[in-house]
Image (cartoon, rainbow, N blue to C red):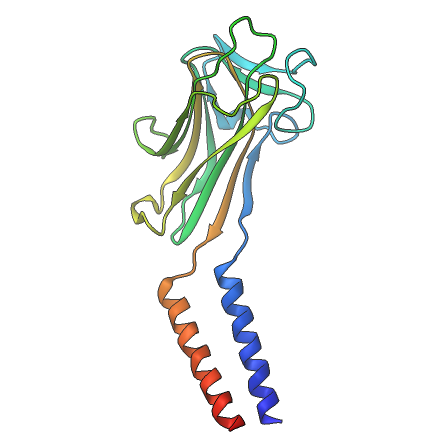
Length: 207
């Protein structure tokens, strides 16, 4: 009976360890310019940027199922105040769908995705630049950047803004932010030591 109790404890401990190490990322913020669209959360130069509904001659697929997408022409940007404050011990993944219209006379995308802190365009925590490699004309492709407050504690407590811009006309859709808690190394180590002790005890009892 005692052996069974210890075995259940060991199994539960292993499940806890695996769960802590493989926690799933959760979607915590999204803007898709349709049902999930809050105009007041965006900063955009509307002189040569805005929203439109793609036609079949422009895109065959895009980031969300139908509806509007955003666009910019050379040098302009869309900025999203996510309303999120970065917490300790967390990995944040910012993902945006970028698209290149099939009906442009001179296709070719060069675009940026940035994670900006506290609304400052001069305070980027992370950024990616791409020349459009891997992008199929007439469709969208996801690009992501990662902010890790575990490895960079200076990010904790900052407000997260997301900014996109391009040198050519580019379309954007389905802005998402995911979060995933990162287990403290000390906590995982302590749990592993405890499990090792339980295994040793169970092995000794069997003998």
